[in-house]
Length: 510
Image 1 (tube, rainbow, N blue to C red):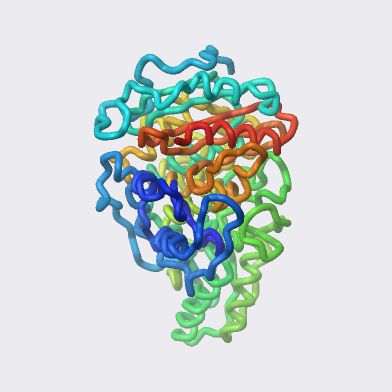
Image 2 (cartoon, rainbow, N blue to C red):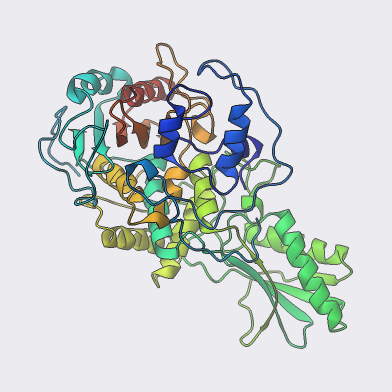
């Protein structure tokens, strides 16, 4: 689940007492799943002017029940506010070259996978009308030295799919964590927003040998493991068993466990069984020391939990597959995939991202590995009609510099995620961090000369050494929801690059 602050102010496009709040909220997202309801209630009690610090507020007494799926984001653009998709609500435990069309506003419709949808009416601009002279506005901002040697950009009208501005929009570049937009869109397409991931305990050989079977739940924590231990202990005691040997099975995933970047505080070894993302401290997001053997550590904790419930257990020395014909004793279910994806995007959670790539691979009947996950994501995006020319995917998180995507692909993904015909993809938009309030944007848009943007921009960040990217949504002066993607390479200062990207996206505001 999200941490206290994220529960208080989970994604809204324009919130907290700003003059344009009502219209922007209608366009950007519903107050669903308790998350945005909590944000709206908290916002109503604040004396908010759009600047300065935002004081904390008490968290809800308990985390809201996960939504069956994220609701429609584009209500004001023709979406059905009652169409939220379905979900299993039972159980649950609940970051090559192409042509350079530099600085030009598009003259023809850009196929972002949304052609043929509704038309603008009322106060919104017509489909062929740019909200401003974007070439004149964005050109100087994206040409700043802080953004390095090469920049790419795409700005698209989400309703029509029309590209309003492009600069190197078809040039593949390193996306860093903005590649999570591709991973999460593919996962939702393959799995559905209500899918839950199991962690099971099975018994064989007279119930005295049990196996903890990892299903790949990246959110498994001590509380969920404790509930699993409760169910397991009850089942064993009902059969008169109080002493067991515990094995653990991680065979669902294959290939290398270690990300190609090597041991790193940003990600644990990717295995099908992990507890608290392998964190060795009490953090729930961001970098942290990680266990070198997350599966073994999870099994050891399960042994302790069983012993605390009156079951004497000993752990196997190494993982092994559960015996054929083993009978299920107990199961723990993750929160819905929609919740996991919102959390992953808000906090740029690499562990969840890699898990989502592997779950997509399983759904596509491919090996649940780095390579299999990357192939599965591309397969799903192909089915969604995404422009994949030049795309290279090697992981689900964006930590690998070999990943390459285009700015045009990023805006196409965001456009498809807002398509009323694909409500199952909405958690990608609702999970985007909110400028000045949540996740990786909580401290952004505060640099010198920054126009007020708090609560008005939702965007996924991407940061590697020398690489800075930003892709998200904003409502323009004509009431249009725009998707934007800005990519920069060979940046010298991440702070200066981030401020430049923030200024470029803020320039799209009214």
